[in-house]
Image (cartoon, rainbow, N blue to C red):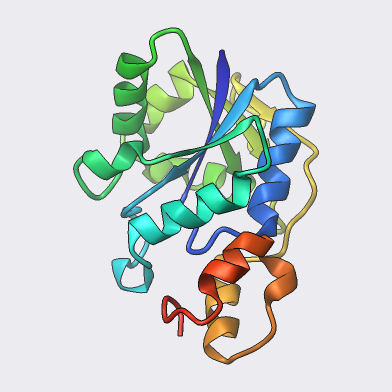
Length: 188
């Protein structure tokens, strides 16, 4: 099985995440897309993160009706912060019959040189990359496929900020995620 790994904090997951994941599963050769919920991204401030179990629950609620999308808590049991190469090694041991690829925006690909063992990632894994405004894709990589996915300008940062300001952000969230957050103090 060919699985695309969509890493992120998903703090919270929003419709942009779903659109991107569904697009990759439907319009590429990926059999499934797994949302890998990262407890601690090495490039992000932990202070702004909701509890990883809340974020995992929101992902599970959001993808409930999508048969080829999955939520993964694989990084919850790994050392923190989470490094993609370590997660991939663990996944390859646990699922030897799966072929794992990475899904990312062109902004992340532009900074991949800062990642732990970036040379190994770029050598051993396929990358499916969607465009992000202001970031051109380095086309010199052999295993990078540029996918003409919808451009999404929604960000979890904007959603958290809007939530604190009591703005109506309901259209930006999957219905079940909105229900999970409505009345909670996760981002308020």
